[in-house]
Amino acid sequence: MDFVLSQKQLRLREQFRRLAESLEPAGREYPRANLQRLAREGCLGLPVPREWGGRGEDFVSYILLLEEVSRVCASTGVILAVHTSVGTFPLLYYGSPEQKERYLSGLARGEKIGAFALTEAQAGSDAGALRTTATPVEGGYRLNGAKLFITSGGEADLYTVFATVAPEMGKKGITAFLVEKGTPGLFPGPPEKKMGLHGSATTELLFDDLYLPHSQRLGAEGEGFAIAMSLLDGGRIGIAAQALGIAGAAVEATLRCLDLSRAGQGARFVMADLAARLEAARLLVYRAAWRKELGKPCSREAAMAKTFATDLAMEATTSCLDLWGLEGTVESCPVQRYFCDAKVTQIYEGTNQIQRLVIARELLRAH
Ligand SMILES: Cc1cc2nc3c(=O)[nH]c(=O)nc-3n(C[C@H](O)[C@H](O)[C@H](O)COP(=O)(O)OP(=O)(O)OC[C@H]3O[C@@H](n4cnc5c(N)ncnc54)[C@H](O)[C@@H]3O)c2cc1C
Image (cartoon, rainbow, N blue to C red; front, side, top):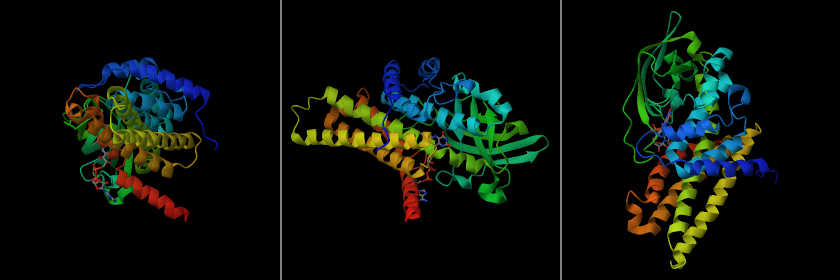
């Protein structure tokens, strides 16, 4: 056994808990005040090196931060996860020196919010089927097409957008671009009216002949699909941490508010099982994060952590809501919010069916 949280990580977890408890659970508005509070503590660039304006902490600590923030506000949690794992890391890993100079410190300090635009109507699980085009023109490209369900759509300052420079080349034509808020030809749609995560704006993004100079291309032409896929393991561990936060909040609220000493044995067994599975989920998630931090292969571990933790979040919130009975069904009860927020964790950053395909592929490869 060579994995345990360090003293520093345990201390940081305490700090993150205190910080998260000073946040307000978001209503239907984008939680700007929460994001500003996180930015002031350096938590919108926690795992970004100090030379680029971040706090230079490790990936495990970032996962602990996501869990604590999501325990209080899962909408802020997903904005933070997207901003960091797929809004800032692409620049850190693939940005040119000029691009890093221009954008990275602003993102890491939380002066700017990052977003990630891959999904399209016919390209969700099968991201390689995207149809947004980036037609080469003199000096750059013209983007045309539409993205769907983009977290922080309309709110973010910088989008990493995936489009194809050569539709006939399939995945090999996919290329990543940096698109600033306010670029002529960029039209965010209205926020979707989702079942949960009400505070996190999720919108369509329309590109109408949007011109980008070559300097806004991230990486080489045709490298976009590999860039997107390289971010997935980290993104999945982040969503697994969000699920831990939601599940933990549901279990804690139920233990705190319901008199389980008077409840039947059935209710106590439910809570005992949930507590045990929550600990198991934490171990899976922290282990995946630890492997990622060490640069070890972690696709299998990330997929297992994401599936187990997000399925648990749905199970925990459902079982807890059952125990609350009719009280659990009204808007003022936090457990109904946890229940509504939990569902989407099974869907985004790769559905849990896709995670199971990844786990099966890795199992077959090993045997
Ligand atoms: C709230 C929210 C926020 C989001 N934020 C972002 C964002 O910021 N950026 C972004 O790019 N995207 C974002 N997404 C999109 C998200 O990543 C996609 O919803 C997800 O990838 C699934 O795609 P889909 O919804 O098109 O489902 P589909 O791919 O259409 O899948 C439908 C069903 O078929 C199953 N399925 C598909 N293919 C297979 C297969 N090969 N084998 C077995 N089963 C399969 C799926 O598991 C699912 O059950 C967000 C989505 C939501 C709901």
